[in-house]
Length: 96
Image (cartoon, rainbow, N blue to C red; front, side, top):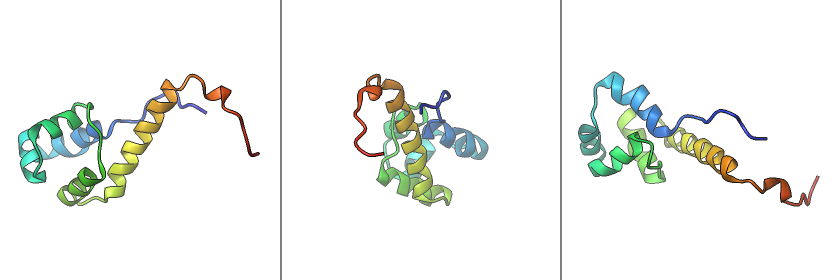
């Protein structure tokens, strides 16, 4: 069953719940995470994805769990896949 509304992209959550309230910009976050500014920019602009390594970095930086970030990405990716999959009704059910 497809959800109507998209879950928030993890980059949007990162921006709204962490960067904006803490007044952290892309350059400062990139330095803290020891990654490129481009990597962080893609993420916060919702054009990049949270990798397991990035989840670990974010969990250390913001005192969260890597599972939080990976679950956010998983939920978003699954929703996107559901929206793109037009032929799911044609998949044959093999088990009840």
